[in-house]
Image (cartoon, rainbow, N blue to C red):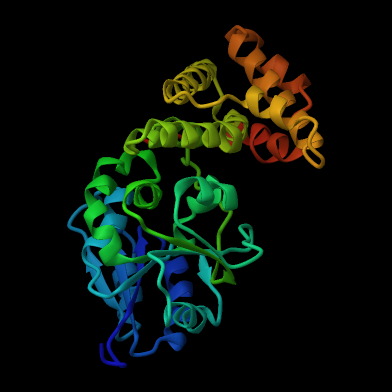
Length: 347
């Protein structure tokens, strides 16, 4: 390969966020070298996204004819990539001022198929290379791996798995499904790096449904082949995500119909994970209760499980009465439950 040939594509999928996109491009453009292509994949935005990109010569612009959904727009970044490496960067996860140089330094002699870098809220304390699924989940949380802006892909290693991306696009984590499948059956390897590239946003769009994400994500194990790996991933979803996302979903309980939805998704997601023989939260609590440093987190997990169970069994008319008297974490009460009247579901 020639030294001036592009080896990395930075692909930014975007929809209707021209201001955020402009800030991202302003941060990235001064960092570009001949080794990097920068492309924007516009999901038919009705705002001035096209005019914003036109201000930046050399940035590739690809506009969808119609809004095909976030998953399909992200997949375009993969299937149209012509370089060895791909970094799918969200328009609102602002890159660091040295992100490109730091990433090229990592990729210069990289032998792994996937690199997962650190974020401000997701930090790997040391360089770690793993080549199997259990080792990956011992060294990284599923929720952290779900941040798409933290992943850099060797495209040819994932090309045979593109079908899985399409099949799993409704799970909200098809990019993660490919990584899990790669380690399960393809002999791939993953590097977990302490280098920080983007700073992820924590802003939540009004219609972003945590309940919907949990329900869909509970089917991620379906896209693995080996029953023991399905059980492993289902167990990790139970432990890492189930309680947190159900409690965050309290912001979606404004009205009887939405309370019934909360109860329904609690039941459906739980049943999905049990179908893959995932170990429930109580198994985790009993296993770790006497381990040094785990008692406080185990107690909190047990308390949250009891709260969720009580709410799932309560009649609709009693639901909010119980929530208001439960010792919920303060951030759940302030950032989610007390703001439930602001929640606007997708239309």
